[in-house]
Image (tube, rainbow, N blue to C red):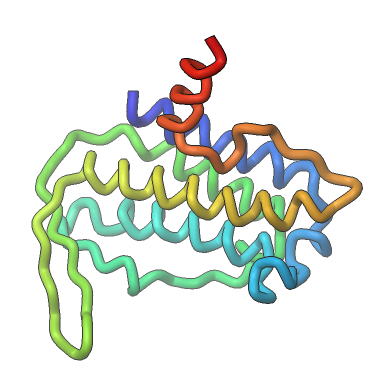
Length: 162
């Protein structure tokens, strides 16, 4: 269920990107502290790419992402990167060490691939919520009501409506 949920969230993102012109995608938005939809999309993509690139090694440092500017300025390229991620998600669960530097000290935390996929899904939804703030300012682009909303919130709202 985890991989299909990630694919679904990424499909929502791809669908939105297909509606945007590159200029809308790359233009800073005051409602996002002058970051762009493209910058948030790049961040989502590169977190997944970082996990994928370090799967075999089993040591992931999310701060050591590539930060590819093309992802944040070119919607077609971003969509192709999302598609590539979707093709590589379904891997065997295994131990992963997360490395982070905090105040000059290395912190190493034990995790596993599935836990990191879940983290990236929740992280993706969080950034989709921010992207939605920018999109709602547009008169030309629409976004689904559940875009950027956690699955648990969607499920909860369904039970409340009954």
